Image (tube, rainbow, N blue to C red; front, side):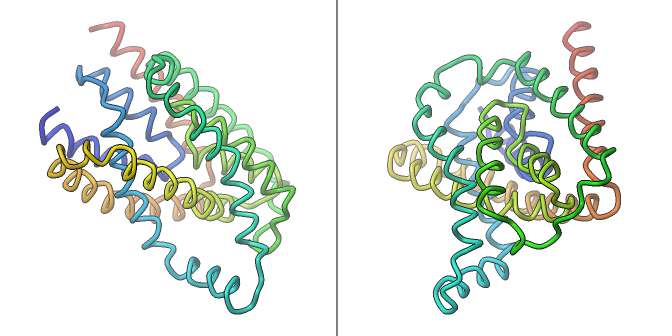
Length: 262
């Protein structure tokens, strides 16, 4: 992989990490289409840029949650976020080696199937307008948090999307689109921090060997990630999630067409 390929993947990672179209799915697609040798470790390391984008964009909410815990002794939202993060975080941690080595998680057919199924779900859910009764973070219960966390486990499958699975779960539980997205982002922070720490401890040598490409690619991921968050929240406030469902379905047909005519 050369520097231009690394920067391109960083750009793709940043754009698709927060928009519910699956960053891992898009990375698998682009690696297959352009004949890139799959580098699972590099893809993991360019999550640093999107993590920093998330921390920066939601810095005020994160500060408030921290103050609630340390000053007001109000643990409700922080506990809910941890409950949501735990199922996918623990599953990903326990199955990390299996996910890294199993071809299922880099199979383009798996990605296309997951993109299509989740896309159809998004379109159907957006038609159910009654799912809008919850609009504030403090209305989320532990039962909500656990249900979202369990559904988020499916995001380990490329093509599903962590934000997509969380937003779908939130909508089904009665959250409006904006709350579903914001809670999705906040709940992903512990998971992303855990993955980042694991990488720094376990795979520090990989970082040293590829430091220039990793840093530059993460810079692209950071900037494009900030733009993607703003874009998603703007779209959700006016159009809902169905547009991303249609994007997924069109993308699947487009990729199938390309594969068949190559």
